[in-house]
Picture 1 (tube, protein in one colour):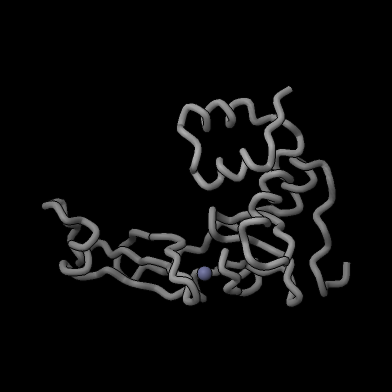
Picture 2 (tube, rainbow, N blue to C red):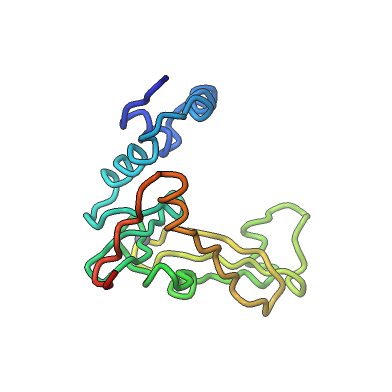
Length: 169
Ligand code: ZN
């Protein structure tokens, strides 16, 4: 069975590998410690030591901080407890006018701002754009899917989810 080094997996995460390599690794990416290698590569990349429990996206992580299990930006910005919607703690740029939408849609296919707005959720510390929502004006901020951490650890990794720091088991 093929096993890939932490460095190769780091390249995979960074998007540094050519697509045919990426596809080959993804499809052969069956070794049991793949999750741990991916986490180790991500942990090397971030500048903080809080153990990563699960990546939410390529620059957003659920990690065990001294304050508990929180959502952290790659830069270390703390978006609060992982069960809260991190978007509510983000800086938000709402594109709800022709001028603001035209920066994203420079061609003629401009959406009508009366019917659609773009919301960009940005890290207040490093400015990274974490997510974009397209929705009708006034629509509530979409609550992110909340991962089943216990199920993921037990069913996929075959081990118990580490206890959340500061929370009695
Ligand atoms: Zn950040």
